[in-house]
Length: 425
Image (cartoon, rainbow, N blue to C red; front, side, top):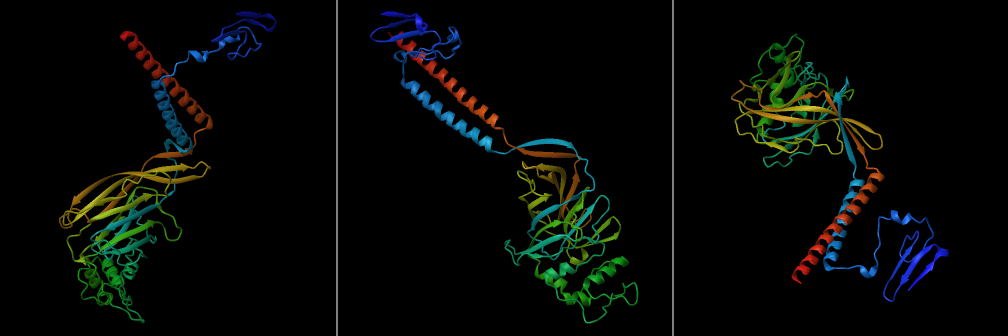
């Protein structure tokens, strides 16, 4: 049965007892006549079907559930990506000048006692950090690596032109030097008749100025009083953990931002002339040194999020009587910018290494050496978050993409099963 409704803009309506089909000008949904432009329905890209003609299958249900699970996982990943801080990287020429370089280290020597370890620094300008104080801490370790003494502050034997061993001796627990106004003998090395040598170090320094080798300290009263050799004998089976930051004593400035090196080695360090560095090993009365070590931490500058220090956790066991470990470090100036606008100037680095076996002292000095050089390229890292518009676009892409792909899969399965049934019939 059909009836016309010309006054309402309806072309025609047909009804029967089972289903109904309505064609109305401007219909936006089935069964709801709406007065609109006559040809607006031609732009509808979502055609509707009568519910009676829809077919639901078990395969379609499985595909739908799988699609929702995939959609859920992808949406969680998109949310996590939106909340995660992204970092943009940029390279440029480093034009900074006159800056200082901060070096942080934590190194364990398994078979070298704290008494004999010397820390020295130099750079290509010849500067040996004269009258510079380094914040260094030492821990005595037993043969099993357990701490013998609590962490205590001590200035290691830092080459400063004067060869001052006082702080090292104080840390090791040596007896007090000559006091009470006594004037100790320099054993022929004094430069003037009234010069006094009240400590073993002052005698050693007087010998250094004369260019004499300080070989035997058994006949030196000051050395006997301080028990230097006795202390070395007591600690000969110990190890040492050295922790610190290289920085200036008065201005708190770091070492110059130029290529240079710092190294840990046994013996007494001194400088005979500007730019020339010497290590006196005769006083230790040994020809072989086990310089096995573990680099717990080594960095240049302050820490920033995501920084990787390639030498952290490196362990090297010395298999020779004596060896020289060399680490060649390329330091890259780095500027890290936080989201709030704070800028942190620091460094990152890459490294290569080399090990040299030593026989006597003819080919090098036993110890651990770090040679660093500055890269002319600066890396700039800037934090950022993904925009909300980007997040919304990602969500739409996930929902639309999964819905479309699952629809194609369901349609393929349904078509295949229908064709197979027709073939069997």
